[in-house]
Amino acid sequence: MDCPAEEALVRAKLQAFEDIRHLDFDLPQRQLTIYHEGESAPLAKALAELHLGETLIGSEESEAETFREQSNQKKLLWTVLAINFAFFIFEMGTGLLSRSMGLVADSLDMLADSFVYGISLLAVGRSLRRKKRIARLAGYFQIVLALSGFAEVLRRFFLTGESPDFRTMIVVSLLALAANAYSLYLMQRSKSREEAHMKASLIFTSNDIVINLGVIAAGVLVYLFHSALPDLLIGSIVFLLVVRGAIRILKVAR
Image 1 (cartoon, helix red, strand yellow):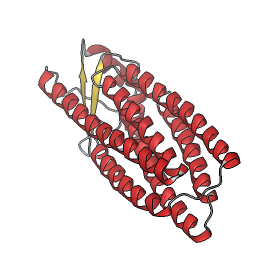
Image 2 (tube, helix red, strand yellow):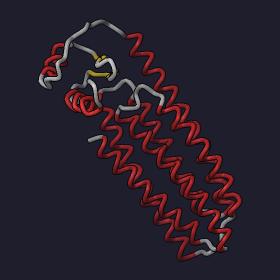
Image 3 (cartoon, rainbow, N blue to C red):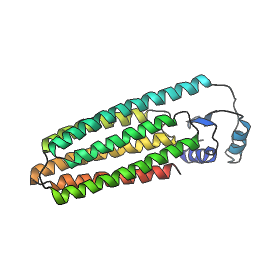
């Protein structure tokens, strides 16, 4: 395989095999290592149908390598889950105290991400089909949460008009930005980043970074205009981005 297009073609061809546990692509060397259970003949037949000039180099048991990769996935997911859940508590508390809908919205997004990472933990070691089902569940969960959050934005718009504390918005969002950037860095280094449930996690974390920048900008606007509208606007945008991310995940998990 000498290009991402061929990799995508192979992944699409093999996604129906539930006994596959992990695909390790080495594009420069044009090699693919398949960690699976059961017989390898059906896999070889499926690859031959692609006419990519495949050649079987060898086949051997490798339970230790598979276990090591799954263990690394779990450690990574536990790390980002802990970061997101801690910032959910932190941002929810500071958001309520500072009357910032942007921080409250971001905290709920952090909580949603925590659930997503928890769901992804359940996917480790499962079949490709099972991982796609888990990714779809995460996408639907985000849509429900986003719609609930948008309803809260509307409630605050019509019933309250008090400006939030812009200082808290900016400082807390900067801390959250650093945490999300670190989480994204860890996941991008993972060998399993192309699997459906890990792609879902990457999408959520990428959205979080955009959201953090938006809340910082909203804090600056609240200070400049002495109005709560920028905070409510960023709250609305946060939930729209969450819906957009959820739709992307549902496409990945088709």
